[in-house]
Amino acid sequence: MESLVQQHRVLIAPSLLSSNFARLEEEVRRCERGGADLLHIDVMDGHFVPNITIGIPVVRALRQITDLPLDCHLMITNPDRYIEAFVAAGANAISVHVEVSAHLHRTLQQIRAAGAFAGIVLNPLTPLSYAFEAAEHCDYILLMSVNPGFGGQKFISSVLRRIEQLAAFLEQHQLPVPIEVDGGIDATNAEAVVRAGASILVSGSGIFRGGTVEQNIARLRDAALKALPVV
Ligand code: DX5
Ligand code: ZN
Image (cartoon, rainbow, N blue to C red; front, side):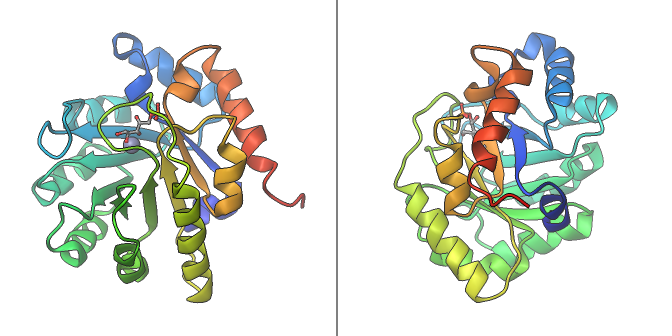
């Protein structure tokens, strides 16, 4: 994950949750044409979050039509049970919520052993200390900027401070772990999110609702890159 970020500096990860599921392949092609770096896949179980979305068969179907890395965000209460199946289906990166993972170290090892990048996810008010403890065992850390469960919610701006704190911690401890941010991100706040220290931006409604996917990705990337020094 770190080497992917190094290569591109900021990664754009469209969240397929906001795409048209009846035309998923076309939506993926639009993401590819627009230069998306990852596809973000929101897996919800109706237990950890009050919504049910997509799962392993959809990941498998996506794997057959695209080479883009598949970034699976598991919002489910028992992720350990499904990790190998997600990787076998084609997941390249799997993140699990610290709020439901009683044996987080083991779960992260399990993800890596299965052959995927291992990430943790923190809800907007979950203490950052979880990320500090887990950082050396993670390939990326996802900070939620909405309460998970639905696309199209408003960005919670106090998360900017959390991104800064986590980025400072990682810098201080020389841990090159990319920070991903998810929820309510669009061209109006992408610069601030990257300036705070994020390098992977998830965006659902900002990419799939209104305008074209290609244009929305370009706008998001332009906004994000304003935060970085020109090299
Ligand atoms: C929320 C999901 C997000 C969401 C992003 O539970 O994890 O990935 O779909 O969508 P927007 O960008 O619309 O907030
Ligand atoms: Zn997500």
